[in-house]
Length: 101
Image (cartoon, rainbow, N blue to C red; front, side, top):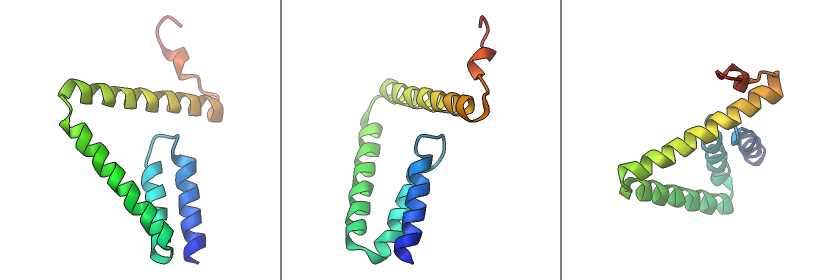
């Protein structure tokens, strides 16, 4: 049951990764479920937490312009994914709302 539940949660998280929202958080939650039963999942979860910790440490050590640039790139990525998702799923073209189009 732990294996099946973990697979469902990880699968849902993987599907949500490209969308705005908590995709990676759900993947890590699924790994946490698997880590209850499987040693390899516990090692993978520990590795992922360490990489996340190093990333946040590196970000915090950067100057505010670098952090602002990384944040802006992240926001642009989310906006593009949202625009594409709305276009593909609902046929809504948000770019047509821009002035001059």
